[in-house]
Length: 431
Image (cartoon, rainbow, N blue to C red):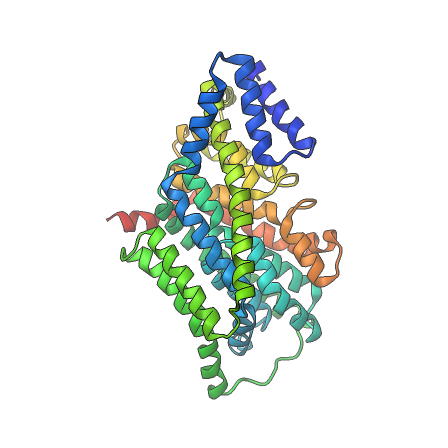
């Protein structure tokens, strides 16, 4: 490891350890590194970089998708999802446990936030599942695993951030995450069904089947949010709208759902706007810091140095991915997923591309790694949410989430061996 790389890493770790915000820590580390190793006018370099980062056209979609999700979070969508899905999930092994997975999958397609999905779905499902006699561990684990789908299923906020940093198409990345996201949801449901069949005591006795009238009524409850999903995702897939236009349509659709359910009030709208501003400001600071540090790292020649070090190890492309996965697993125990992505991307992306991997594929790989950090103690954010919902300790929640973490690792191995799983849909969209 060269002196330059060591100094940059030490600065970032030192600032983070001092409790400085991630974005400001990266900005400070980049500025000090340039002062130490390059003779550059810092004011001009930093000012132009901040302006270019803050005015990137791709970032317009970010506040719109966040606002869409926040409007739905502050309305009664979670209650409608539970009431609409419950009659159908009673027909399969595991019964209402599947509401965690299906509800999180649907909400992910209109939110893009892992934490928001976990909290919104969990505040309805957890009390219901525990009061009906479902095993607490599998209820917590299924919610923890399913809550991470908000990162993988479009419109994903971390995907937008990655696309901006890696200079790839947001639409390509959205399409690349769709099939793996649905596969992951299916694997979760398969595991729940297997556990319910192998250990019947985990779920209560099967409730009486719902009538056709009840099933039809449940479809009406699901109609607003599923229509919004089809409208937003379908308009992008079929080419009727750009990503920004689809996001704007999503905001209008969320407002209409709130009005139809009579849960959109001036107060809830104001709270949604405030939450959107806070989230965008946080992401904006992180993005500015990350883009600035990435340019500093490139100017100092660090990616080439790291690439030469790794090439000296003689790793095969598959083994390189294994090493990176272990690296991100370790990093995920001390940093949240978004911070992990923006801090490491300037170094890891050039190495992975040089090894022959597509940057869109690597984006999905990174997103799954970020998902794992959401349920990795001690800083997994989803663990804190579920802990508050279930009155369990963080380690109890982490232990309950372990099988679902292993499923995510299995999906990572699957897309590494068969990258077509990720690249098939983007390739079809380009035709």
